[in-house]
Length: 465
Ligand SMILES: Cc1ncc(COP(=O)(O)O)c(C=O)c1O
Image (cartoon, rainbow, N blue to C red; front, side, top):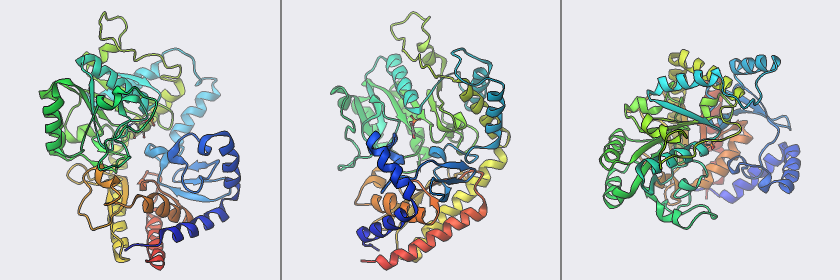
């Protein structure tokens, strides 16, 4: 069913503005000081974001006093909800003891976190830095130095942060996802980044056949996040491993989203497929800015300045790398996830499955075609993420980001502007259609979110074209 989106959006914006007067005033001021009124484009939704959030558990409350059940949860990293007590108490205690801010020295906690993560994913060495973006950049540099090759292969729709080796084929759909998406780069970047289609073994084979000898690495999210919340098919990921071995290219798993989201470790162990390098971010910092590259000795060694080699990689520096408070938050959080793994993941996974199923059913009852992504029981039953795609036709599955971003298949505006604002006006903050469930969300809150979806679907029928 199609709806009058312009009218619907106008009505939703009108209502949102009535309840967000202080945020609107702040947005006007912020826009004079910052581009679009903020520093991260995804947070700056239409018509303007709400500001000065106070958050706790499953909820956030804005400056106007509106409280939302939040499924964005700090870019999906807050598996225990906002400001979990264990992390806040550990940090408070430390700060009260006069510790926690940057010292510029290494510490015990760094070792503790390194040990925890290495054990969970079963690899040799780890180095910490501050953002997923930096980590994917360093991992790519390690791969290019190790292989002495030039080309970087990534999948269309893969998001690895705004770093030069990955700024192609992200969201701009022009008969596929294969455009450079940033100015300001070297012209060679375009020809140095090869795009392959996620979950398409034939395309992968072809690209390796054509460029194989020149490919330094394949960087891939085994569970693709921003590209549509899609798991790699097991056979595809096996092919990924087989071909990277065959062509001696480094396999980098970007687990910034999937790391510690489906169990207390990387999704790689669920598949039983080992990459050469892994990148972690988001959850490993327990709410603080932390990321890591982990992998085999022979690759990680390249950032050791003591090794005489023309392959040394300057994966170093970073005033705030392994910041003490970040390490404490990370250790506290990861230890908790490991200890409570058996309670946490089945619980949030069950809720994820319920939401994915029921959102599709609700919309279908009211004549809308919706496909929810984020689940795949052939990989794991414990998926707590939900992507919502409003499809033009009924689709059985969304297999790759080119489908999610193709305006001929999925209505992005309906999801990101209209459904998002509809949910906000009902008291729910969703992302990519819904988002990520945390242990702080109660069954009642999840049910309330589904009741809101039902009210919305019903309301939309009044805007039928
Ligand atoms: C899969 C993936 N890799 C890398 C990044 C970049 O991480 P950061 O935003 O911490 O720089 C993101 C961020 O969302 C991501 O989703």
